[in-house]
Amino acid sequence: MIRIEEYIDGLTDILADAFGERLVYIGLQGSYLRNEATENSDIDIMAVIDDISVEDLDTYRQALVSIGNFDKSCGFICGRADLSHWNPLELCHLLNTTKDYYGELKNLVPAYTMEDERNYVKFSLNNLYHEICHRYIHADREHNISRLPVTCKSVFYIVQHLHYLRTGNFIPTKRELLKCVQDEDKAVLELIISLRNDDGYDFDRAFSLLFRWCQSALARI
Image 1: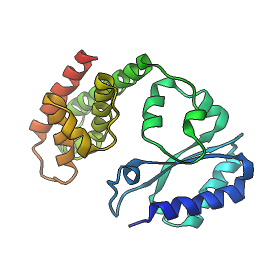
Image 2 (image 1 turned 180 degrees about the vertical axis):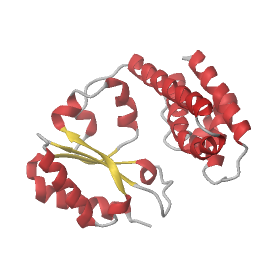
Image 3 (image 1 turned 90 degrees about the vertical axis):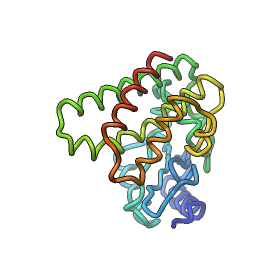
Image 4 (image 1 turned 90 degrees about the horizontal axis):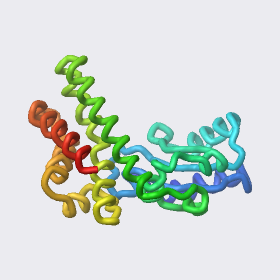
């Protein structure tokens, strides 16, 4: 498995050489941050470049190629000015799911409110609910069965933010969050964890549970 600290140190050196003082930020996100990475996990890096251009995207791509494991490279890149105007609905999630390695993310983003956070959860639930209902009606059963586990990845983040809205505590991992939630939130979180390693799952049960949970969660916000 990739030694993530060495990977980030090496990438930061390459980017500092390429961009100089224009390199504003490097952070880690995703499964490597949560200590849930496997051999197949992506490497989710966040990078911020001052006055970013299309040419800079090419330079960044070459840096990822040169550091190795390009097939697993993933993440988010943007300009400093772009980030300063970012949608406040996403900022709570961004700040709580990114670890600083070069620069401080909190100094680069605008302020957000708890109402922004509540609207983030509503928007995420709306999208999930629409997606599963649309596909259930308009796609065949085999496609529904194959896509539901992928769609369910967003459920973790929604439960994570529902718990944060209720308690003020942001729980970073599925394992920790499972100990903190109850009732329908716990049931749906157990479902998505089980779907990661179960190719022969009970689709009707899983869909019904997810469908009812979406309705319940929307009513609670």
